[in-house]
Amino acid sequence: MSLFGTPFDAVHDTAVVTGAGNGIGRAIAQALVDEGVRTVFADVSAERVSAAIAASSRPDLAVPWVGDLANMQACDALLATAYAALGEVTHLVHSASPPRREADHAFAVDRKTWQEMHAVNLDAGFHLAREIAKRLIAAKRAGSFLFLTSLHADTPRNLPHYSTAKAGMAILVRELAKTFGRYNIRVNALVPGAIAAGGFVADASLARHIPLGRLGQAEDLAPMALAVLSNRISAYVTGAAIVVDGGLSLTNWFEAPVLDA
Image 1 (tube, helix red, strand yellow):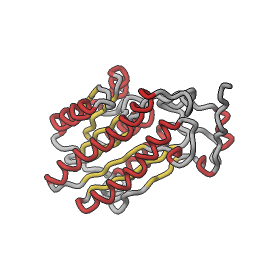
Image 2: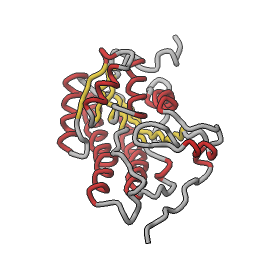
Image 3: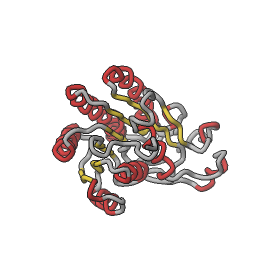
């Protein structure tokens, strides 16, 4: 039997994907159901969730959930829906993130925007991972979690609320990987580059900074995401940050922001 032909156990593997309504989260959620994995498509937009499921190859394997993960009660509601629909959750992909605006530089970002960015990326990610891990440990089941971080966890983005949230996620991945590893629960990060999807509106001229010569697409992330999530392919990989950026991280392409006088 081909290892790469069966990366998941379609009988026992299940998944929750946040931010599954668009962009990278959508591409990964659709790729999971392609592989026969029953998957909760979680997003803040009912319209986007419905469209993502309708466009998937196996909508019968998809479970919709709509809510704002900036609210901790919504995180618990997501888990309740997932357990009711799937039984156990063996795989978590945390891709949800509020929209980011170029205008929200250090002197402009307001407290609400700052808090929501951290709440969705960092607080919700930690809460979901910890609660799912508790259930897996009690059931003596293996698991695999994947966080979508950013190149800007290390490189300033002129958006301090976004960069600090992603930097927090980067170390959270390593903390959880170290703690959960003894229970056979792996935790890794996928680090996208300039991906023309979701909340990122890419300027085509950015391609000149990318060694592979083009902007990325959400679909460029999905194969690597599945490989890292798979306990058959990546059983000995945890605490890793896998960069998928066409080589963009080889240079810092952002200038300091132009501020109003």
